[in-house]
Image (cartoon, rainbow, N blue to C red; front, side):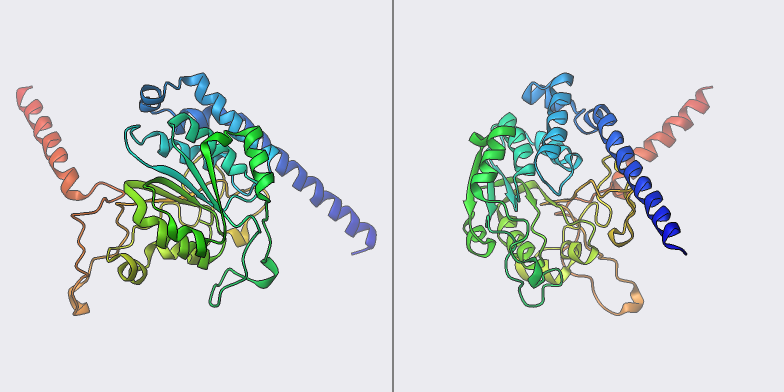
Length: 335
């Protein structure tokens, strides 16, 4: 290939990339009404917080705009998805919203808007010094990342003041290993965007006991299956909390929020973007507890009675199905 051909090919690829990015951006903007309708369409939001259609659309647009004005690694779709779960928590339920890792404050600004509406505090944990030194054994930590994703506290506060509701926020500065273990307030929802396994361990270890019974926990690094594996680790959850793992909805590609991303991240093209979030709940059950007879061993003693499945179990569906069959039979006999 000649130098001229090489330049021509590079130019074509560059134009193709610009076109793909433009189409992605256009799709994001045009989908705002659909995102509003499908994620914030629940009647309780209007009933509990007085948000009508235009107020919801205005909130989603503001979230979208904020992610364009503040450097952030999280999509506005993820913010709206988290908002939908927070809005579904009864106003009388006691608890704060927590964010771990805020960078420049893009997600903080949007979560603070939600916190203001639901009249809850948003507690923000961050070192405000970037990523820490790597811990031994942390697969996703590396020395070259030390100090990355740094946002000074004054910068974050200024961004939230301008684009969010800073009066709803409380900032707690320091490394997670020093600060998060002192958290005492009940938590209705927590968003964790901390990149490293060691940091995730600290945050889950100390925040989970404070989650309310049906409290939500969200993470940003859902595209890393080995990172998400913590939420399926029988050893980890038995060791620290004597309970089965809760699992993680959206592990690998994120929960469905109208984005185009099939995964894995290693093979992602410019046409797709991981624009979602992974999530779990305090009462979820994500353990494989079926043990075939030939295994010669017993299942772990947790069972499913005390936990919530993410899909309806056969014993829950069977009565309805039986009633439907009887109704059809009676209808046929009557005709």
